Amino acid sequence: MTYTVQILLISGSTRYPSHTCTLTERVEEALAKHKAATIHWNLRMMPLPIADPAFHLDPAHHTDETAHAFVAHAASCDAFVLSSPVYHNSYSGVLKNALDHCAIAQFYYKPVGLMSHDENGSTQAVDHLRTVVRGLLGIAIPTQVCTAEQDYFELGGGKGYELNSEKIVQRIERFALELMLLAHQFRLFRQSILE
Image (cartoon, rainbow, N blue to C red):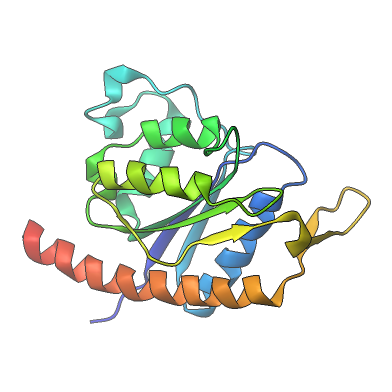
């Protein structure tokens, strides 16, 4: 039996144009080459309300339509990609808020790819996200992607950015393949333990 792997990509930048969103879009293209079905939840374009602790244990019953849709995508996906700019040596507040809309049920034994952008390519955001993913019982994949200013060039005229680094492009390919392989394996594992 074959199935399509579904991956939810969440970009935690509210800036436009955004290096983080450019990186997320490039990863989405790489995943599409492996026949993944993807949803890119751009938190600038689809903002979420502040997480309500009333739904902390059961986010699937959130009464806000946008939050409900977000949690439904998180529940049905086989894997995640979380991307963030580095803010104050960590990941962005909008990404934290998005994750606070979820619970263990949405992340349980699902692989999670981590990415970030910083002026110097710092890994601090993904380092912190590994701890959060572990708390949600997700599995952060070994390969991560952290970009720096010199990895991009600006298209000009408000059109955004383009990746300029062959090294980063190759890393994205490895990241996408690793995420796909683990998504397949962990889906089978979840099915075996939840039946």
